Every structure is written in C-alpha cells, then in structure tokens.
Length: 375
Image (tube, rainbow, N blue to C red; front, side, top):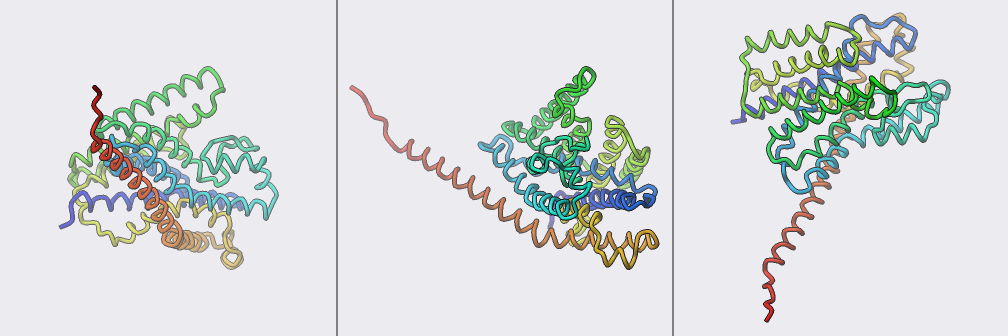
C-alpha cells in the first residue's frame, strides 16, 4: 500500500506545473507587448509563479536532503547534484539565446555587450547589470536561478547539522540576517551590489517552504474544510496587487503562495492524486517549461505568426503558442533534461560511493595493523 507521504508529494508536482504555467502566461502577455500589442489583463499576476517556485524549492531541499544532514562530504555532494540538475539545460538554453542575438543583431545583441562578460556571468549564476542597466542574465527567466544557487550555497553550508529542525532554524536565521544586512546597507550606500541584490526580501520565501517541510515531515494534515479557505486566502493575497515592491511582494505573493502550498500539500485529500495525473506529468516537466517557454514565446514559428497573427487572432495565437510551449517542454524533459540529469547525478553518486568505500577500507586497514611496541 503506498504511503500517505509518498502520494502527497504528487501535489507538489501539480503546484510546480501551476507555477511554471503562471510564469508562462505572464511572459506570453509580455511577448505580446513586445509585438506592440496590448498585454492580456491579469496575466501579469503570473509572475507570482516565481514566488511559488521559491516556496517549493525551500520545501524540497529540506524534505529531500534529510539523508545528507550531518554526513561527511554532504555539502559538496549536495551542490554537485544541484548543479547537475539546474545547469546543463540552462546553459544550453543560454547558448541558444546567444545564437539568436548574434543571428539577428540589433538591440538584442547590444543589450548583452560585452558579450563574454555577460555570458560568463550567466553561466556561473552571477548577477551583473547589462549594458542597459537591467540586472538579468542573457536568458531572462534565469534571474531566479541566481537566487536559487545563492540559496543552495547557504543551505549546503548548513548540512553539517544533524537535525532537520536545526538546519531550518539556522537557515531562517541566515536568510533573515542577510536580508536585514542588505536593508541596512541599502539605506546608507549604493555599494556592495551583490549583497543588496542577492539578499533581496524575496529569499525569505525559501524559509516558508522549509518550515512547511517540517510540518509535512511531522505528519501535520489539514481537513478539506480548512484547506479550502486557506487556499482562497492565499489566492486573494496573490491577486491583491499586480506590481508589488520587493518588500510587499513577500507579504502578498510570497505569503499567498505559501498559504496555497500549505492548503494543497497538507490537505488530507492529497493521497488520492495519481502519479499518472496529467498535471503531475506537467509538473515533472516544469523546469523544462520554465527554461524553454521564453525561447518559444520570443521566437514563434513564422508559419504560426503568418497564419494566426496575434494582432488579428490573439486568442487562437495564444492557445497555439501555449500548446507549443507545453509540447517543447515535455520533449525537452524526456529527451534532454531527465536522462542527462540522471546520468550526471548517478556519476556523482558513484564518485562519492567510491570515496566512501576507499575511506572505509583505509580505516579498516589502519585498525588491522597492530601498533608497534617500543622497549
């Protein structure tokens, strides 16, 4: 019989699908604006999908990394596995975006000058201002991955702690302390750009997910009659404002996403979700969707634009381009992301197993050699 906890994780996959699709809708509206058309009303709220992703990330790191807490070499293994999970697809998409800029030239290419500086910063998840003053990597949605990697580094540095509660407490203290420091620095000077940028209030949303993981691991559940109003309250907070400031974003989109996450993941009906659910499958491809959707939306097929131009057929165009995003995402996940991630992470696991075996053999050999007595 499947465990309750195992089946409930399928709800996390559904929320990943929701978050990726939210961001896609927001960027669909933005892409129409880039074509000189009016944005789709309300779609800008899809940017809150990023906040839901951050809550999910905080949850997954605490939930899935418990076996690493207090183990030798945990920090290095954790970071290598995260890089193997995040970097290859992102690097490939960044290279593809670069090739588009070079092919078409114009403002796009000018925006990433000097190219090598921006390319290296993008590949190593370092936030730097572009020539236009905008702080974003070459692949625009990658700005969130800069925060993800920053969070991973802090989380990895705490894996020497053995208890998950201690890890979450230390993580909370570290992120709150960094945000406080950033706010203090920002009130006096414009220096220390990386601290002020990376220690944005938005990183507090990782803490929300971490504490929800503790509740989940403790077996806390919600009856459906409580989960529904909590979810509605979360949605209400998300819809409260379309363009919040960094601080207000945490209070509206961040807390709203956390409440929605709590309502869905801790609800006692979640054990009925099948792994074959179509939204679960889309959730598994959510990272591919997050990376690929921008390339699809900003470079739509000519035949689609000529046949169903967004100026005259905005609804049909939107449906077809969203269908293409989903198709490309699923193919990318199954053909590239999933096999490549599995291969790289298996290599990392074998590397660490070999190191552990050699260390154990060395320790056993040391113990088996009798000490020499001296007269």
